[in-house]
Image 1 (cartoon, rainbow, N blue to C red):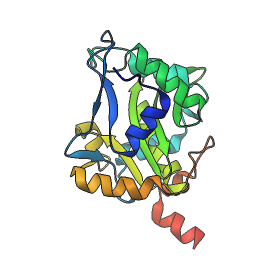
Image 2 (cartoon, helix red, strand yellow):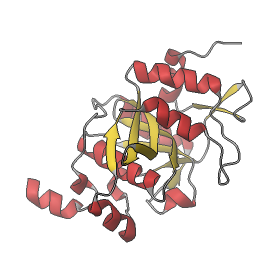
Image 3 (tube, rainbow, N blue to C red):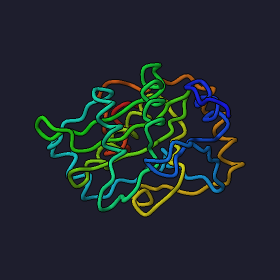
Length: 217
């Protein structure tokens, strides 16, 4: 059996594959390359009105790459709404290594001194591969997603891979595309020069895109 290494993971992402375990207790990792493939088009990203209002209130603090291990642990926890998880011990070890190498990133949502949600994913060139998110308070992961998209648009990313689509992501504009279409977009994206920032983005990229274009034109 081929040993999975961080370098092997990066090469897998570059050809459209990503790893998952069947559950938390299963040590075996399998690679998937679904058809159709879920993406969130950055140019048509949609924010529900109620979430837009909540973000503008500034109730939650948002950080980047400040507590990656905590976000990884939060995403791997089972709950009433998530009775099982595909993130096993081996996956956590590998993604911590990817974080140390600069490929993996997290966004943390804080309420006072506590992390209440967030997400993590992998960036290669101008592609960001969303891996998992969680919320301990309503809308926390949604706020992380909005910050993610703002950051990606600000830094010149062109592809946000969600792997699959679901009702939660559909409200933001997630769509299914064919594997062939995905791989075409992927080949273009990974050859771009873009870096995921460890800084707050200009949220007008997604909150008030038309206003932002006017201000910067």
